[in-house]
Image (cartoon, rainbow, N blue to C red; front, side, top):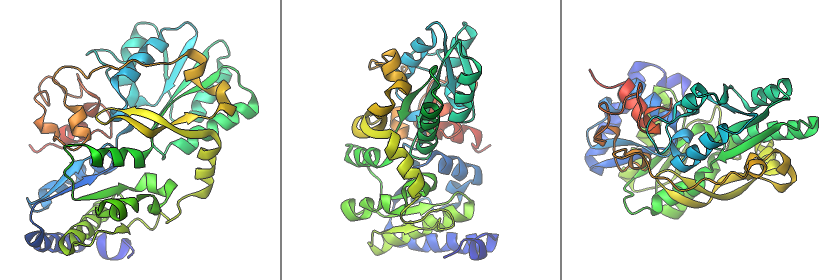
Length: 365
């Protein structure tokens, strides 16, 4: 059903909310999880949690790429920034994320003399390498399948142009293995999923069919406007009420069943699945991407011997629980006290897609 006509006006959303309230009397308490940091921020900005029945609870999942990057990886990135002639290029969010010790960050490293630049795309980092041949430019490639094609395209261009002083530290994550690990975790308690529209635009809606077919969990691929989200939530609640788990795609104006073949081919040409460590979920087989051997010259992990050691989160930080939906941001004893956007303890308070940042920015009162 197209979104624009029935659901862009307030009266359409009001009818949907009434429908959700009526259905929730049949379902009892429900816990629905969004698996996208952009959804988390959109839900908070629109105040959707306050409009839903108290029995329908929305949880934030592992959908923020900066947040799921473990402390040990960040500590190793800080160490890499101290090498002579290395210039790290990163998206802005990553610069403020602390490592295992409070107060550490790429911003601090830059203040201490490290070469750290903010870029808006991998291609910006490649251009920076061409402009500064005296530096080894390393692009910090964080993200999910949404940003993986762009990173792969950049590596292909670097190889074509034979740029010797450019490489990518591949910290990219894969969504499906992480969701399977989340479902297998002992504190998992979710009744349905709002699936990430951006990832689905690349992989296709069918990438999430395993949720209803293998786990009996309702799944809806959703867009990002309040109307998109309320409509998608209503479908999830309907599936729960009817005990009819299925996969629905309400973001058909962007997402196709098969996704984007060109983008997927680009990823497959340059990247390959690998075991990866996620904050909150631990080591996941196939949970990340590695750069294929054919492009090893542009793999910063091989070029610089990147081998992060395990590291615990700062004391008191509950980001690992928030990422799994096992705790709300407000459940953390540091939230809004020792941990604020001005002085963050954990990544969920730093990232523009972090659950704690969303809860703080759009808190009541």
